[in-house]
Image (cartoon, rainbow, N blue to C red; front, side, top):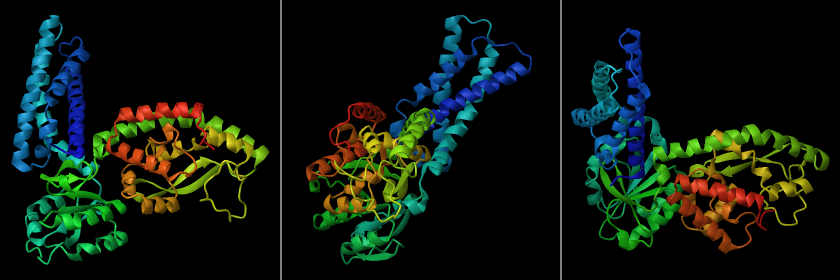
Length: 471
C-alpha cells in the first residue's frame, strides 16, 4: 500500500506516458508524410487506439509504483523494459485490431509497424526517466522537509540505512531526541537531548516532520510528542503499529521504502491531486478576474466615492499554507482610517459603525471577497480550503484547540467547508468555532475534486441566500 504522494506520482507518470505516445505517433506520421510515402487513413483513430493501450497497461500499476520509483540503476532499467514490453504489446494488439476490424486498406501496415517499433525505445526511456523528473520537480526543497527523530537509541540504529535513502529523496535531518539514556551508535546525527525539549526546539526551528521510533515505554511519551508536533504544524511519522494508543485512525504510509503511520491523511500530498486542484482553481478564477472583477471594481468604486472615499482595496496580512503569511485582497467595506490607529484585527459586529451602507451590502453578499481571486491566481490561496485568519486569531485558536494547525497543511480558500454551510462571520460561540475547525480537519483528510465542486455550488447558494451571520 502506497501513500498519497506515491499514488500521485504514479498517476502523473501514466498521464505523461499517454502524452508521449501521442507525440510519438504524430512525429512518425509527419516523417512518413514528408518522405512521400503512402498516406494513412484515420490517423486520429490509430493514435487513440495506441493511447488506449497505454491506459489499459497502467491499470494495477499504481500499487507497485512505490518499489519501482525507489529502484535505481539496472533494477529500474529492467523494470522499465518490462513495463515497455507490456505497453507496446497492448498498443500493437489494439492498433492492428482496429486495422483489421475496419478493413482499412488505405493505411500502410509498414507505417503501423514502424510506429509500434518506435514506441518501444521511447517508452523504455520514458519509464526510466519520468520517476526522476517528477520527484525532482514535485519534491519540496530539503529546507522545507527538515525532520527530527525521536526514540530509544537502540531502536534508532535500525533506521540507519533508511535514513540514507530518505536523505536522497530530499529530506534533511536536524538531529535526534532520545527517550532513554541509550545513545544511538550507528547514526551520525546531532544529539538534541531529551524528548522533553522538543516543544522549545520546534518553537525556534522550522521543522517539517517528526519521525517517531517506538520503544517499550512509548505510551509514556508519545502523547506529549504528538501534541507538541501538531501545535507547531509538524507532520508525524510513526514507525510501527500504535493504533491502541490513539483515538483517531492512523494512516498507513510509505516513505522511501519504509513503513510508517501518520496522524493525518493528506490527499493533497499527491502531486497529481495538487495539479488537479490547481487546474480547477485557475479554470474558475481566470473567468472571474476577466468578467466579474472589472465591473465589480467600477460599481464598488462608485459607491465608495459617494459614501466613503478612500482606497478601492483593503489589504491585510493573513496566515496561509504551512503558517506562512501573505497579504489578502478585498474590496474596502469600512470607512478609510486616515490616522492608521484603528484596530483592524477587531471583528466586524452586526451593528458595526465602521461599515458604510454599501459596504454592508457587499459583505452580506460576499462581493468584498471577489478580489481574492487574485490571491488564487498567484497561488497564495485556493478557491476552496480553510479560511485564512489573522495571525492574532490564529494564535488564539492554536492555544485553545489541539492540532489546530493541521488545517494549514493545505492552502487557505476563498470559501471553505464551514463557510458554505453558513458558519461564517463573527466568532461568537465557541461551539460553532469548534465545528468550523472540525470541518476544516475533515476537508484536509478527505479532499476530492468532487468535494471542491460541492463546496463551490453550496457557496453560490449561500451568496444568493446569505445566512444571518453574513454581516
